[in-house]
Length: 420
Image (cartoon, rainbow, N blue to C red):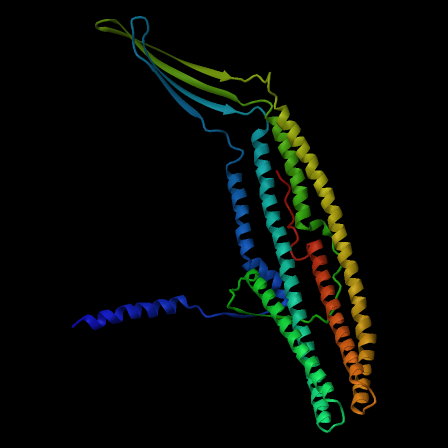
C-alpha cells in the first residue's frame, strides 16, 4: 500500500540534488581596460599568495618578546644531618643587547617583503592576462579578415563558374578559385582553434569556469604610447631594496647574538628540623641569583660572516635587477616605436596600393585581359599585407603591455613607512 510513495521519494531526492548542483553558465563581456582589476580580485594564485602576508604577520606577533620565565620547586626530606627543605624559585632571562628590537624590526621587514611579493605577482599575472587578451582580439580580427577574403573568393568563383559554363574560361580556373576559397575557410577554422585554446587559458585567470562565456572587447587600431614612467616603484625592485634592509638588520641581529642572554631570579626556602620529640625548629632564607655567560669560545663569528655575505648578495642582486628592468623598459619602448611605424606605413601606403592592384587585376581577369594566377597573386599579396599589419599592431600592444609591466604601472609598490 505504501510502496509507491517510497519509490517516488528517491526520484524526488535525485531531482532536487540535480537542481542544486546544476549552476547556470555565466556570460562576461569584459573590456580590455578592466582586465587588471579582474585579475586582482579573481585570480586564484593571488588568493593563495595573499596568505603569505598573513603568515608573515603571524610570525611578527611572536617576535621581539622575552622568553617565558621559569618557576622551580625543590624539596629535600629531613634526615639526621639535614633539615627538611622546600625551595621556591623564579627565573627570567634578559638580553644585554638590542636583540629583541632587532627581531621585531626584521619581522616587520619580512611582512613588507611578503606584501611586495604579492604585488609583484599581481604585476606578472596582469601582464600575462593582458597578453592573452590582446592575442584573442587579434585572432578575432584575423578571422574577420579571412571571412572577407573568403567572400571575395566565393564571388570570383561564382563568376568563373558562370564563364566556364559559357565556355569563355577554362573550368580549371573555377576549380582553382573554389580551392582557394576553401583554403581560406580552413585558415579561419585554425584561427578559431587557437582562440579556443587561449580562452581556455584566460578564463581561470579571470575567475571563470570552462563552461562560462567570455568576450573580450577593445579597439586595437588605436595606438597610444604610455607616458615615461619611473620603474623604481616596481614591486620586485622595491622588494630587492627591502631584502637589502632585512639582510642588514639580520646582520645586526647576528652581532647582537654574540653576547648570550643573562639569567636572573630569586628564590626562597622553608626549613624545619626536629631537635626533640616535641621541639621543631623552623628556619628559612631568601636570595637572589644571576647567571652571566662568558663568550670565550663562541662569539657567533660564523653567523656574522654568513649574514654579511647575504647582505652583499642582496645588494648585488638589486643592482642586477635594476639593469634588467631598464633593459626591459627600453627594449619594449623601441619595439612599440618600430611596430607603430610598420602599421602606419602598411595602412597609409602599401594597403591602398595592394587594394588598387587587386581590383585592377580582377577587372582585367573579368574582361579576359589577365590570367587567373595574377588575380590570385594580387589577392594573396593584399591578404599578406593586412595580416602583417595586424601582426604588427598586435606586437605593438604586446610591447606596450611589456613596457607597462616593466615599469609596474598596473601594480606599483605602495609607499612604505620607515621601520621603527
